[in-house]
Amino acid sequence: MYRSGRTSTCQLIGHGLLSYRGITYLLKYAPSDGLWVWLVLDGRLQMICAGLDVGHLTAKAVVMRDGAIVGKGVIVSHDEADAAARNALQAATEDSGIALDDIQAIIATGVGRKFVSFAHNQKSTALCLAKGVNIVYPDARTIFDVGAESSTVVRVNQRGILEDTIGHDHCASGTGMFLETMAKLLQMPLVEMAQASLNGAQRAEVSSMCAVFAEQEVISHVHRVPPTPRDELIKGIYGSMAVRIAGLAKRLGIKQEVVIVGGVAHNAGLVHELETEIKGKIVVLPDPQLVAALGAARIAQEGK
Image (cartoon, rainbow, N blue to C red; front, side, top):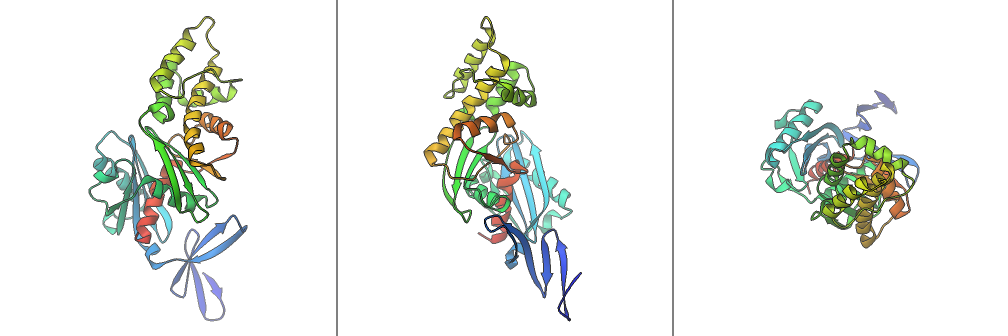
C-alpha cells in the first residue's frame, strides 16, 4: 500500500497497475519522450478477455485482465482450427488461473480465425499485429511477420494504427516451411543452420522466386565437385528468403523502426540476412509468436 495525502491510499493491484480512488492506472513507458507515465484505464480494459491467433501449424492464445497479460498458450497442432484454438485457450487459462467461463470477450485472428466457433468476433492478422506491436514496442513502424506458410509486412503510424500491408502465401520460398524443408534436405537442425549462415563468408546462389527451384539448386550445390562450402550454401538459403521478404517491404515502403514477429523471428540467420537486404536494424520482439494474439486480446478489451 502507498499513501497519498492524509486520507487516500493507492494500492498496487498487478504488474504496472495501480488502483487509486476507484480508478485503475497503467504504468507505461513512452520511448519517444523517455518517460514513464500513468495512463487512466478505460473501464473496458478491466475486462477479462482473450485473443486467439490460429495459424497453419500453431494456435496461440493470450488472456488479459486489467490491461495486463495474465496467461499465454502456444499449441503445435494438426487439428482443425476450432480444436486447436480451444486447446491453446485452455493452456492460457490454466497459465492464468482464470476459468474459461470468466472470459468476457474472445477475438480470433490468423488464417483459421473464421473457423473458431466460440470466438465473439474475428479480426485480420494485420490489424491485430499492429495493435500487439504497439503494446510491446510503440516505436515500431514496419513489421515483418514470418510464419510457417506465409510472410507479411505491415506498416503502422506513430499511434500504432494500420497504414498498409502486403504479403504472400502462394509460394513457400519466404516461409518457415521452406527452412524446414532445407533443414531436412541438409540433415541439419535449424539451430545449427542459423549459426552456419552467420559463419558464411558469402551467399551461394539460391533462387528466391520458387521453393522447388531453390531445392533443386541446393541439391546441385551439394553434389558439385568440389561441393559448395556448407556455410556459404546455408547463407544463400537464408539470403534467398530475405530477398523475397525484403522485396515485399520495399514495395510497401520501409519506415524505421523495424521489428520482426512470428515463429521464425528467433532465427538469427534469417534476421541477419534481412538486415543486410534492408540495410537497417531489425528488432526481435519478445514472445514473437504471441504478438497477434496479444493484439486480438486488446481489441477484445476495447470492444472494437
